[in-house]
Amino acid sequence: MLPQLPALPIPPSWFPGHMMKFTRMLPLLLKKTNVVLEIRDSRLPLTSINRTLEGALRKWRLERGWDPNNPLKRIVAVDACEHIVVLNKRDLVPEWGMGPFRKAMESKFPHQRMLSASLHRPRDIRDLNEALVNIAKEYPHAMELNVLVIGMPNVGKSTLLNALRNMGIKGRTPKAFKTSSNPGMTQALSTRLKLSLDPLVYAYDSPGIMLPYLGRGPEGAERGVKLALNAGIKEGLYDIEALAAYLLYRLNVIDPLNPAYMTLLPANASPTTDLNQFLDILARRMGMLQRGGDPDLSRAAVYFVKWWREDGALLSASKGLSPFENNSQQHTTISIPRSNTQTWGFDFQWSVDPVNTATSGLVPQDPSVLVQKKMEQCIEDFIVESDREDAEENNLSPTQVKKKAVFEEKERRKMRYAARQQR
Image 1 (tube, rainbow, N blue to C red):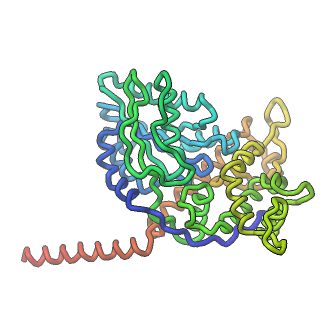
Image 2: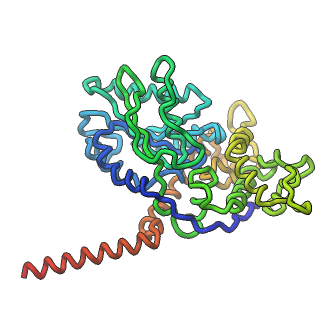
């Protein structure tokens, strides 16, 4: 039985002026951009998609000659125009899901090139550098290749660019961009950063752009907590115990038998879904006591969330076993998974009936194909839900709704006035 999702707070709005400024600048910036490098968090590969930027990217592709009816066909190819999605921090999710996820995304978004990266894997940085250099070589007549790096706050844009510069420029190179574990360090478009000398490749770092409004209802509430828990939203906008409650819930879903937080508790402790009980045990275990000997639950909640951001995500990923294991060399059967609910990161969750799966005769030779199909369904559900929110304007704040109504009323008045003038 799945643990119950805790009550989540209404998501705050965090969209400071520098984010609005960059959003308005984006169409103009794209006119001198050859490659858009969109960085996403591997733990939140769907939640960290910024749909507010997709309209500008779609228009950019059409203006550069891509066929509106066939995303894989380019009618006019004067210069480079590529959209590369990089799943950063790949070491914070189980490796078994990376391949199926890439294939699932390619089936749903064929116009996007999908790569994964981790600063702890130099080969990933080298592959990304080679991808940019190869694009530049496809257009030898062009003097340079300009790359625009975009993404939500704290997905690792500046850190990744520093690593790419070190990989692409021989010799010792100074750190080009300041980095921080807190979101919002970069607040303006950077100067050009040289990533390669031959061919010439330059990159622009950009401010992290949050969604102007995270949405209404339980979907918007969970979206906000996911981003805040992974340090994507400004610290202090969320009650820390709300983040701890969701983290406890999510770790219990990922592995109900031996969740990653068990390393923080005494050896004789058992998994729990009760936040107060968990924080009580954790506070006593860490010696976090108030005057009189009572456990300091607030301090324990801060410690729990900090542990997740610094060590817990990596520990959870390293413990993440593949949901299926082959029982024979012919790969015709699969073992019963540890749980009927399988997860990957925070965005992917699906149900599996191990008995029916094993006896139905529908088991693929490669179990990762089944995982890919489940992921494709999760992505399709995400697309449908996002489209529904757009249609119902659930992604607009009450203030935005009022502004839209005022604008529409002004437009109607202009039309009525113009009609009277023509009579």
